[in-house]
Image 1 (cartoon, rainbow, N blue to C red):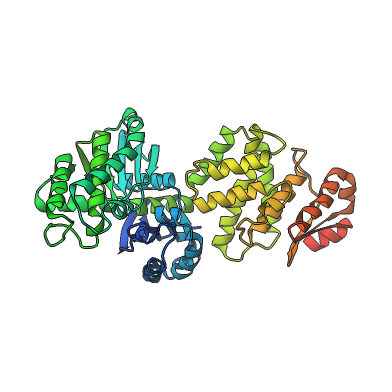
Image 2: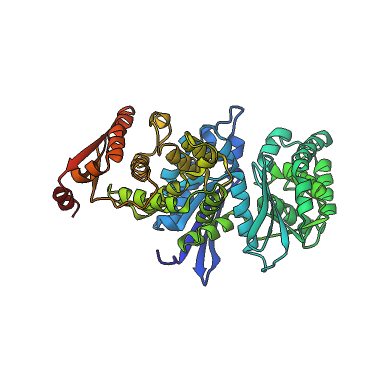
Length: 505
């Protein structure tokens, strides 16, 4: 696609939802419009880790307002991501179906480390270019991300399950702040940071930056009260802590610079920030303009300009697991050829996204061969489901693993998986490609015809080709049994070559 003039990012955070619309000019994104909705999604998680209905309604109303601003934008120019609350919620799938309908765009739930990567990308794009290492700390509603990187490249990333909303619910549920509660909150935070602080400190950095709501809120309070300079000093955080203890709560009427919607989560945020600075040895922390939503925009710009980090991730995986690149290219080319012949979705953005995913699945199908041959597809799927895959959302990663798991052997293993209807077309294309390319040589495939039918698929090949390739013919006959076992059909037609050519033409 041509470079778009506008891009939009939606961040469904555990505390607030954010929309950022940016204008693209000369490879730079200039913020054009922002919307912030203090939904506090994480506060709606009950003891059973399910989002309560009142919180869902509040979130859907916020998404409706954001969706109005996005109306008319092409699908490929908008990316919406969910973070910790949606990673944790057991009923996230049901909520996301409603949320997608209201927003008007797909919503991806990203992993903690992918969130960290995007935060770093957003922060460094709002800072002067530098080759030295920078530390970025982001305290969110349900998780806290730490990253050290150089230039635009993150080097180590971490996501901890501590945040200002979850910490408030645990330690300050009624808003009351006292020394025992503050000490418990700080101890929990220090324990979380203690496990990774040594690694980060050994890696080292020259500058430290804080990002997003909690840190910006603390900076605003310190600046308004004259307790800190341009950066957040550890002494200033300690002074704010003592004021909260003296007041017994975070009170916007008594604390200059504190917004009312930030008050319920401030004490937990201060406890986490103080613990992070102590464990990481930070005397001060500068505040960056960039955040997750900025990183999502720049990552999206890379995708539309064909600099997709996911492609680099696939290439690195193939190299790490010694995948035969020639076979990967053959699998990708044939699987896409089969898929394209099946009349894929009319929506261009959806079709392009599925072709990308199918191509990557074809290239990565054999990463499990380095572990074991006979069940390699299971090992491949396990790696894809559990590895750190920069650029991929959790849903993309799970879908990729399912496709690879299904590309050979019996189909019963995915019978109960949450497959999209179009996934079966990709499974079919991938299985037929793998079956026909068993010889691992360039295939001179005769003209063929494939069709997606109401209850399955059909493949027509010239009878002469089937006679000359009896092993492939036998495997195609067996394939029908696998599809029948999951209530679908696969029909192989042997035709005269002129008939197949005529129908293809």
